[in-house]
Image (tube, rainbow, N blue to C red):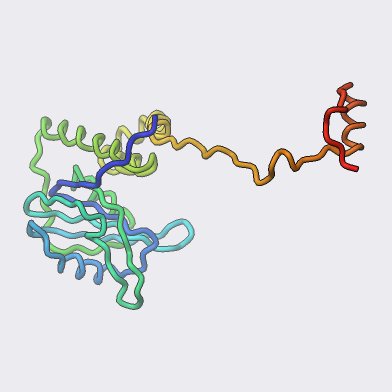
Length: 215
């Protein structure tokens, strides 16, 4: 059955943002993100620019903080274009493995950094807890595509080996029933013509005497 709507809340030291169809420059994006007043100091920001298949640009951003921040405002990282009134709103995720996210967004080679990257001080036990958090975040997503993207970034091995199973499971979890069909026409307004009656009687031997006939 479909999951109930989630309450947006992220509590993390590493934040991963994706600005779809975004024309902002890397330099301007870093400038605006650095200017945000948050509860923990920023240690590292990486902004990477990629192109969609249709040629439109999008931005991936990794932000590392000194301590955890709690994000409950989905508009916190919105950026207004310097050239128009357009507002660019990102998809916001916690980055369980900052190393994996950093590698994922640098693959295109067009990126800009600010600050010093913070290595993950994690042992195998912490890695297991981090993966639990990854799949918990996936279940709190709003769509199957968003859940798969979280796993692709934070657990690429399982994403590669179990892609078909993951997609089938999340599409079932996030399935939205189709709206019932409502006809634009009243049933009473439909008339069976004489030619239609003759065709029915000839082909199906149906007595259509009780049907309304259009004169």
